[in-house]
Structure formats: structure tokens, C-alpha cells
Image (cartoon, rainbow, N blue to C red):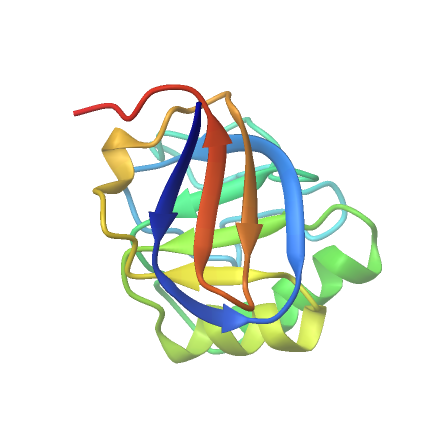
Length: 138
């Protein structure tokens, strides 16, 4: 059974990849290595993990506006997230996703914690939909 979660499309395009979920916001400036895609922020739930090629779900971005350019650098270096899901898009992450060509959705109708980490999901930045095979978690 396909699960479809509706949200709002922010950055156009579609991507399908494994879902990496954080309940904490992310700062891309000094929080993510633009050369490797590894989360460097000490104490962050995703510290030591790579965002490269993953659908990255997190509440919102934090930190400097330079974070937009870090997202662009991640894409240029081939280690960007395949797609981004936010609870609420803010200008830093939305701008970075747009200039980097990363599909992005926000305002999913289900909490991020209900998304099945590790599952392969499809993010459609055109329609705002998130799809995966399985059952809807509570």
C-alpha cells in the first residue's frame, strides 16, 4: 500500500531515496561538512551521519544565511541531500534548496517523527507530496 502525505512544495523536482529524520533543527554553516555531507554539529542526533543522497527531514534550519551557500556547495560536491522535508521552511533552507536544485516540501500533514526513518520515500516538490510503500504510522 502506498502512503501519501500531503505538504507544500517549496523547491521543484522529485527525488527518491532513503529517509533520514531528525527532530532537531540543522545549521548547515559549520554543522554539515560541505565536502563530505557529514553532520558535524556535536550533540546533534545526526552527528557523524551523512546527508548525501538521503531524503533529509528536519523541523527547520538554524544559523547564518551562509547555510544556503553550504547547501549549494553540497550539491556542487555531489554530497547534497536528494530532497528535504521541513516542518516549516524558512528562507535559509528554502533558498539553498532552490539554488542547489534540491526538491523540498514543508508543512507535511503528519509529524516528522511519524515518518519511517530508513524507508525509501519519494518527495515531489512540484505537488508537495511525500510517498512511500508501507503503513501509516501513528
